[in-house]
Image: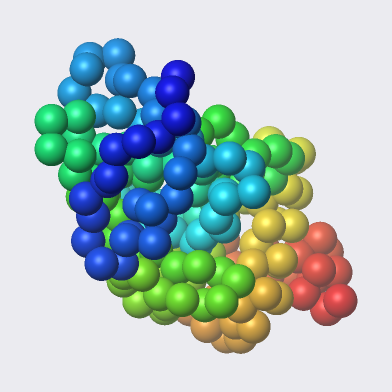
Length: 183
């Protein structure tokens, strides 16, 4: 662990994040390093990624740092914590090649992708989590879905159109979801 002294080379959309100072940690293989930011520098994001299995997944999370190639200091990925229904998960590396869409939810600044694609991926991922989870995970996913729909001011007609292929339209009539959206 050492204070960051190297300059991370990145594309223009990540240039501001690459300048944030933090603590550099060496990777286990010696190929990539991670720069973890102090807590006050963490950034909230809405993100759409392609998982290694090819499935597209959308979620709200917190960027806690960056990863970069040790040999040429080129940005290789983001360290993200996914906001889960009951907690915030541990940081995981998401490679830049896996990111399809990325947005700052506070200022609605789009870094890559489109707003609609990110919204749809997050709604579908939360709907799948509500469908497949046990009662507690189901309620948590419905709460997150309701908060997301309220924050983004999405119409219920659009949500219904997006989740119909998943056969989970009955989630829109769930009391937990209705309570949050109506508030």
